[in-house]
Amino acid sequence: MVDMSVILPVLWTICFLFIIWKLPFFEVKGFPRWSLMLVFGVKLLSSCVLHYMYTRYYPDRATADIFKYFDDAVGLFTVTDQSWSDFFRILFGINCDIPEFQHYFDNTNHWTRMYEYAPFLDNRFIIRTNMIILFVSAGNIAVHYVFANFISLVGFLLIYKTFEMFYGKNTVVFILIFLMPSSLLWTSGILKECLTTFALGAFVYGFFSLFHKPSVSYGILFGIGILMLLVLKFFIFVALFPAITAFTIIKFFNLKQPVSCYGLILLGGVLLLGIMDFGFHAMPFFESFAGKRGDSINGAIINEARSMLPIEKIQSTPWNFIVETPSALWHSLAVPYLWKWNGMVQFVPALESALFFVLCGLLCFFPQKINGQNRNFFWFCICFSFVLLWEIGISTPVIGGIVRYKIPIFPFLYTTLAMAIDWKKIVAKLSFAKAR
Image (cartoon, rainbow, N blue to C red):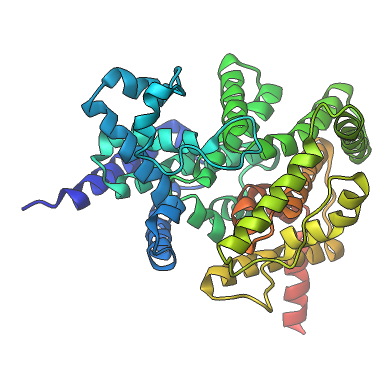
């Protein structure tokens, strides 16, 4: 008897491999077509690791991210047994937050949540994404993994194509974007990281393509990226905003000192947010971060988080945020520490944290001159990365959360640093030392 629980994900895997092989979009200059197929295969293996991790370390299925959104989607999919009209109203968010629909949501655990700090409910977006996939998965979670890997692969490819505009074909860029272990792992399930990767890829590829070759399709892609980031990870959009503002100003006015422009934009943005928050109380930006930090600390204590950092709650005053900034950046960059990791789950992220400092050291001793538009792009990536690192460090008290929230940074910070290093000089030094 044919086991459809195995056959169905295999069929979808073959389908996506065929798409990768045939569609011109998946052609990467300088690399054979099978290279992306191999990446897709590695990502599928990462799904197995992710599934194993959650089944082993999260005995309560209702608290495991890869299951909880899937289970809620399955619960809501049963609405089709009663009313297709109500199902599609829930799926598209059409006037479904009314008392008459509450009995449908009684089948879920995560449709609503206690704390919310963004304008939109990202958990509902993930549940709805799973609801759409259920049309073709027959409730088989392995099919959802296959879709997640394809979605995130497209996102990483869009990010790679963005870097390709500035650096051309480059193996280092390919490896750092597609094959960072934490990126492979956390984007292999229908989680925020998977969908955020696609959204971020659509955002940056659409944005920079509009400068290179303006078209309606790039504008639509850019718009999709904005909308998805607003829903999924509002704080990522906040981190991107000063970077795209500075890049645009430098591009239009052909400024020769981009670092000054990025610095002024950041300073002006902080002052504006401070005035709006502390002066007019019109935009509680810092208050939201302080609240999120406090609630995250409370949640970590209640859930007895094993990787909680020794940080305290913070008051939403300008001085407290200034004082906390160095430790926030250090935590988001350095943890988990390579000399103090707890199990294999933290060992690989510890290596990735150490890689940042290795790249910084190499950059100090073997810098490569960055010219023209590449300099503007370099500072775009640095600006975006460090604003996001600050947001993560200020608001997140748990190492596991920091590791996951840092995923969007890897393709930009690490790749940008690597491309500013003169690798030929390093090879020449090593060859000279070996010859001696």
